[in-house]
Every structure is written in structure tokens, then in C-alpha cells.
Length: 256
Image (cartoon, rainbow, N blue to C red; front, side, top):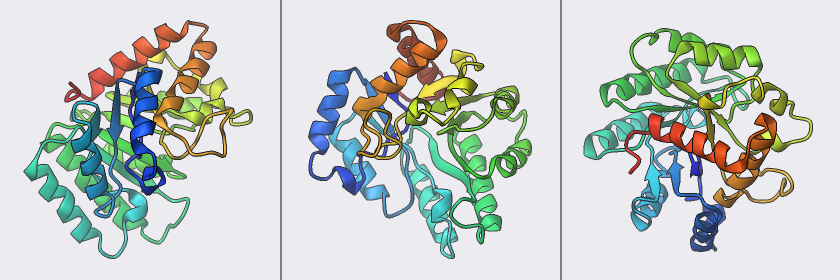
């Protein structure tokens, strides 16, 4: 299994990060992708990657909720990092209108710039969408047919939205602990999506799956998400992990 979205470099894991990774390995998690948030998170993420080479893989990007007055300086750091070394992906990037709508114009500008860099550096994008599906798809429309690839992280949309993502081409749908929530309704949507378009993720420390909801999430819990998907698709656990792992390797070409 590959955890395609985990923030285990965050301070929530400072007291037991080594144990968290040991539990992930014991659970069968073979690799973990670390999406960046902004310049503040960058050193912690790179430190973790350096401690676990070949297991943790860093992405670089500016998260939409970190797009503020200083967005140009933050973008310059992303660009400098892309010039400095290789990254697994550009992310997490996107549009978030849940917390604050006042920087929508800047969020779109930052999103577009980072997509352009993804094409320039031939990297997939990890897209964050919250209360912004239409705005996100409107931005992506500018890049239709240009070879853009990526994942819609933490998908919670409708079947029509899932079909729109798939029809666009080159994109996968990231499924995390939300699919295990009793009243999320996500399971009914997911069962209508072909598993060849799905990726497993935890978004640790957030969105902990049932029965640990309300506690800190970690990559070990990827097993609970995979088990739920296996039940949804009426296949065994190994089949869903094989499918989603293959999907991750197809998208994230720099995984080794």
C-alpha cells in the first residue's frame, strides 16, 4: 500500500514519529508521499524525507489556505525548490473557499502558476478542493489536452463530479478516512467509480477513519480505508491494495 497523502512531518508527530513510521511499515505501507503546505512546513518535510530515503517522498507546492498577501514570495520559494532538486509532485495546490474567500483571485493565480510548473517539470499535481469544485474545473479547463496529470485529494464530491474528473483525463481520485464515516455518503459514490481511478491516502493527522475517528490519524490506518474499499467493491483486501498501488506508481513516476 502507498499512502499518497500524509503530513506526518507536522508537529502532531514530534513525540513519536519513528514509532508512527514503524507501525506504517508493519501494516504494509510501503511508501508515503508528503505534500507540502508552505515555506514554514518545508524544512520539517525535507528533514523527514532525508531520514527515510526511498520511503518518504516530498512534494513541493503552496497550499491554497496559505495564499495570503505574501503569496509571490511563497511562490518564489516553490520555484527555487523546483530548480534545486527533484520532487515527487507539485502539491498540495488548488482552491479552498471553505475558510476564506477573500483571496480567491490570488488562489486562482497561484494555482495556475503551479500547474504551469507541473507541465514544465513533467510532474503530477496534488489538488486540494474544498467548496470549490466548479472554480477548480474552470481553471483546469485551460489545460485540457496538455498532458496534465494528478490526483483530486480527499474527494468528497458527487458521482457526476467524479465522472467529470475522469473524463478530463489523467486524474485519479484520492480516497481517505471519509469513506468510512457512517453518514458521509461517500461509499455510495465510490461504488460507482472504477477502482482503476482510485488512490489510497490518509491525510494524516486529519480525517481519521472509523473506528478511531476523533483521534490523530496516521499512515497505519491506510489498512482501514483499503478494507472499506474492498467491501464496497466486493473484492478481497489484497486485490484493492494491488490496484491502488499500481495506480500510484502510474501517476507518481518518481517513486522508486
